Image 1 (cartoon, rainbow over the protein chains, first blue to last red):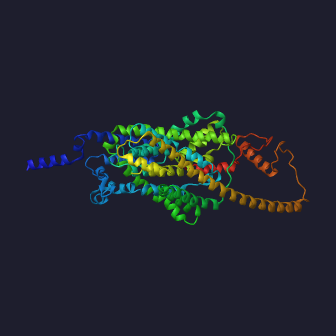
Image 2 (cartoon, rainbow over the protein chains, first blue to last red):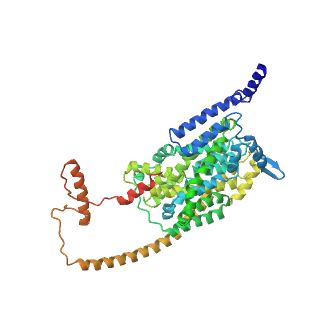
Length: 406
Length: 146
């Protein structure tokens, strides 16, 4: 009887997660769990985008516990069936997948990011952009970071899909990064969606640290002190026409940007119409929160030890910060050009807000501006390029997808 | 335009052997498509924004004209009433209404009362800031949740 007892105990120990740490490569899981603790610390104690980083880091913890079987990266390998070589066996996932596999289908099928955009649209006031449409240009310039990083990644010898996924980090837009990378990357690539999302959200949280030195280096004290005039008031009809117009123009021009831009603008129309208060509120709050939980946890779950503990991850981290910095610099430089062309009516600092990261980037412009002139309110002026940046990065995402599609 | 690049790149994707020209064309077409898209939006929004702004201004002018007419009538009615001038009014009031001056003086007096000092308003000047303080307070209030 004692023998039977001992063998049962031994079996249990073999099946337990602890045993998983001692198999070949099991130490990597321990490292990953420690990294997840680090991100939890950053989210809770340092307040780094906690709404996303906390679910992501917990997803990271869950996926790296051996034997928990909540997420299987091997299920997400593209297979060739007939002429279609970009095929995932969703039937198999539904039958054998764990909780996080099932939820991750929303990422892979491109459902969550557009729904997040719906909520963002319902929260955004495009008034400053309508009052000063030239802000669109700053939102476009800041996307320069995306395309120049594409160049950098290519030089480092990454595949086109990887280049596109890393480059989109420069858009400083979490949902867009996840949207593009989940569409481009497959399991055979050396980086995963989770890696991209982690880098994107970490850098978005670091916007107040990354941007100001670049902003100060590229502008003169005189330029930073420019006080901009008040924006004209925007009527309700203008705010109603705007989302419809943007959707039609962008969706016709770059169809692959339609899911993101379309949902963003639909959310905005719900808000501005004033007749769908209940729906607009749900999109802003409950729906957004639910999707954030699903998105964060599952994207975190893709950061399994074998996808993170590679040289490519280091490349993502380095290229990500370069993408961010070039985006900021491009925005500032166009801001300077606009300053010259308008004979000093535009403060170049609002250019850096063209990287999306709403509303953090706009607040950074405001803060750096106030360091020179304490009574200077650049916030509303910076919100224009900021929301234009959201549209701009969605457009850039569409362009990347149509160029680098499998 | 960018579909050609797409085909070019997709055909070479599997072997990772894209050339420098492919990459350059991605960067150039990518940036130009984003710019063309957003420049189109700038044009559209500027055009309809301009139209609405004009319409709004006309409406405003009309309203202001009506308001002025009403005020002129009101002024006529009150013309006969004697106007009391404040004895020790501040020397420079920068064209600010007496009522506002009184309110500011009262606020200053209230602060002085707390510290037990008697304060005198010597001059009142309009601040140079382009945004009026109420709008600024509203702005701060609206953007605080961020």
